[in-house]
Amino acid sequence: MPVDIEISLDKIREEVKNVSETVGFDLLDTKVEEIAFGLKALYALVAIEESGGQMEKVEKSISDIGDVGSVEVVRVTRL
Image 1 (cartoon, rainbow, N blue to C red):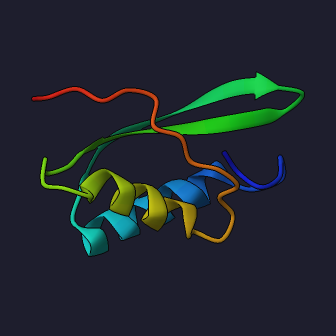
Image 2 (image 1 turned 180 degrees about the horizontal axis):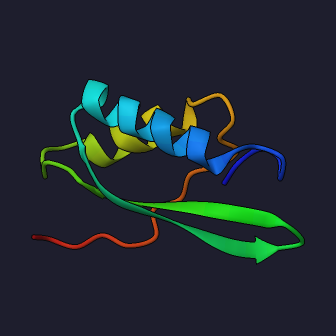
């Protein structure tokens, strides 16, 4: 979720893509979903290694992006 409704989700999407290359996870897909009153959420489908701590590392790297207000893991599955 962005910190404000005025934040460009396209900008955040690009930042997540850049972070994925640095941190080492695959950004497979993204989608934007209306939440309420103009607030939108960016959902990112990512693939990561199962090694310990990777999920937390991905969450932290995305939450460290300047305009990101919150990060939440919605679903986890094995490939």
